[in-house]
Amino acid sequence: MQSSDMDSDREREKVDMFQVGPCQDAYQFGFLIGKRFSKLIKSRLATDLILHNQLLPFANNTIQSQSLLQTLFVNNQRKFPRYWDELLGTAAGSAVPLLHILLINFRKEILAFIPKESAKSSCADTLDDCSDVLVVDETMAIAAHNEDANVALVGHTYLIKGILPDGMFFVGYTYAGELPSCAFGFNSHGLVNKHSEFHVNPHISLHLRNYRLITS
View 1 (cartoon, rainbow, N blue to C red):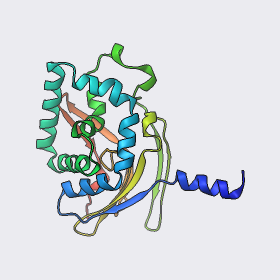
View 2: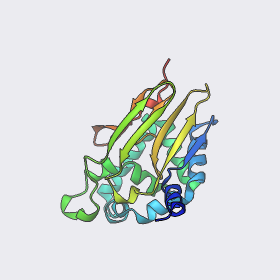
View 3: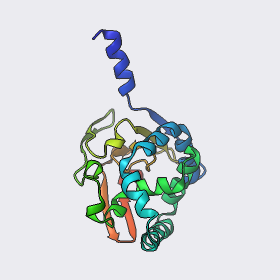
View 4: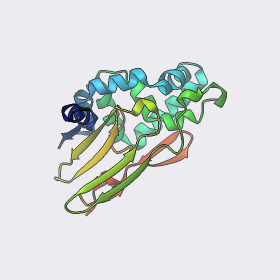
């Protein structure tokens, strides 16, 4: 392969970074990200087998599933209003159905309620997903990551640098359509975080994103 071809391949493999903020509210933050990466988000949603084969059929299937989703969404809207508004903004900015954005962001919680026999082995969402190595100090930030989870995520990622009103910032590796920092990242104080997830109860989800909490 000639050097020009290799350079072209490297350009295609680069993860795009978008700096956003300070914003007037969380909705605007999500809207700007959704608008910037609308094409990538639509592509991810169109090719995500977990969304089409499991999440959407479950959401549209029974009164019981719709009741569960409604409770999950209402509880998270009440307990995490800023993140919820960010999801609304992402859907609006990318011009995709809000339900699709909600389903991929809550997929870990929802998949637990889908009968195993209905899950397609070819599109199963694994529990051990990816591995990360993160090094951050005052002069540099290094991240090594292998993408071995949902195949729909490959090629559908970007980096978000979120600037807060006080000038502090965080950088998050982001799966298209999902909240920044659902994966790994770090903030201006050098606090590094890998994805952590706690299921408080069947109706409440908390994806901890510690590095977005800037502390003195």
